[in-house]
Length: 308
Image (cartoon, rainbow, N blue to C red; front, side, top):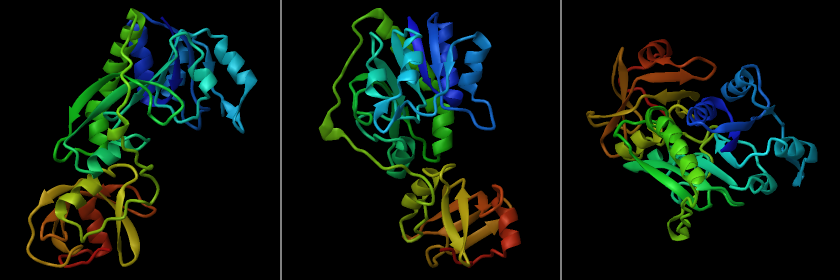
């Protein structure tokens, strides 16, 4: 099958390589323009002599850029595969191939639509998530489902670990399976149940300020659901610091947000229900992420210090 890969980054490159190994023909690769570092998917296309288009945008003011579309259409894809897409792709492109377009999404759709799906699964305390390969329509993650794969969420899983260890590699395998289903004819198109749908806004920027008055489990979920992006943060004497590496802990009674214990390997902070969380990494504003003990020593943190 002739496939157009629309995407970027390591995941896009891994999907590209797997589909090539499966014997599919790469009709073209479509990525955003590169910055100071080469994009892995674009590099793969260059290595194999596959047509590469890096349009800054596919449309202007809602109108398809005809030059960009013509270059895309000239590759004559039978199927679009979207793998880590951040650009807005026009419906004319999505509907152009005979087999239309399929896309990877890191949740069990229709739950957790939106681009911060992994964050919100952990933030909300889900014990399970997964991935969905679906047929793209004009909504946000609303198209019919081709296949789903389930993944348990461990007690201390973070955004980073869940994606790296589970949703990334399983997503590559699932995309291989999905394309095989399309190539085989009559692939599934399961309509999503809108009664079960949730959509959460992007979990980005400085949104993740820690509320230490919440129960320890909620604080734990909040920190690990923001680890490593955007990074849960609190303040010390008015200065922000991002905290990582949360685990549940016990602590003596004290005010929420106060330091209950501290050593070179970690720092324990009390929460609103009498429980606590232990943290091992900190990143103060304008500095690199590093061991929390080193930062605490330099910042004068001690047992009883109050955050927030």
